[in-house]
Image 1 (tube, helix red, strand yellow):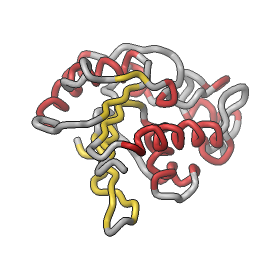
Image 2 (image 1 turned 60 degrees about the vertical axis):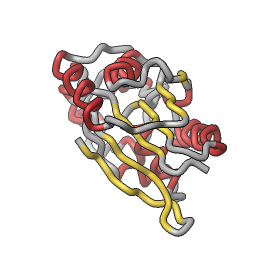
Image 3 (image 1 turned 90 degrees about the vertical axis):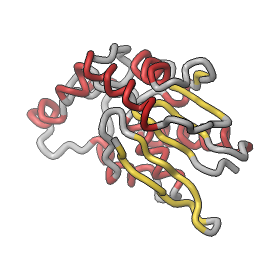
Amino acid sequence: MAREIWLIRHGETEWSLSGAHTGRTDLRLTPHGEAQAEHLRELLAGQHFDIVLTSPLRRARRTCELAGYGAEAMVDQNLCEWDYGAYEGRSTEQIRQERPDWSLFRDGVPAGETLEHVAERAQAVIERIGESTGDVALFAHGHILRILAACWLQLGPAAGARFALGTASVSVLGYEHDVRVINRWNQQ
């Protein structure tokens, strides 16, 4: 089993800056997002990964590249962000004008992906990296990484609502005495 799983969220985009839900829309990093991703190179300096996986979406792939791991990265479709369906491109505040008590992790999205399906994809990533005996890096998006962490901790996917992730953040999952734990969270 992997020693540590490094969760690396992509740098800033126009929509992450505005708070809009960005699922499958393939946005570029902002200039600030590019600088954040370049800073990850310093933060990750000297870190060797047996496996590097990235979402196929441009913002994650570019972050991976600028962080210095683009040449060894393999694309994993399961690391795509949550498909927000009818709520794609809309902020929580905009959605709550129509549904005042709406919560993504509780209520989901119309015409999009269910929380349970996102969790199945997260679990598939965990299973894929299960044979590695070294460290693993996953370059992806806020909600899929939060759900993956909840699945890792065996808390159920809705617990991902409790794990905030900033853009270009690094979090590390691992073990303590064979118990799955969070070693670091939301480091920037």
